[in-house]
Figure (tube, protein in one colour):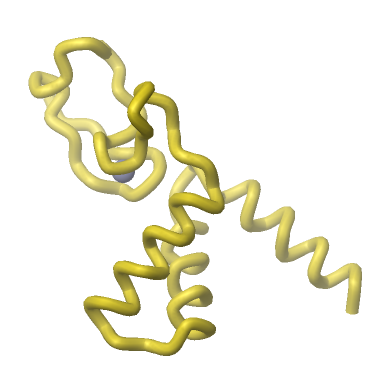
Length: 90
Ligand SMILES: [Zn+2]
């Protein structure tokens, strides 16, 4: 059976997960303890990846990373909240 990572959308085959019956996150999105990585950590990893693969600037890579992450349940609310805060401070 296949399920999808709540943090990055990657397909997870649950037969590969010996320890968890209902994995929410793929192994790239959890830390050494099996917990979801922090928003900052995951965001920075994504920015780095975008920069290396696509060669965009820091600023653009960050925008893209946030856009990507805002599609997934693990980050949706955090990103929406940050956007609202930014709106308020304008
Ligand atoms: Zn993932």
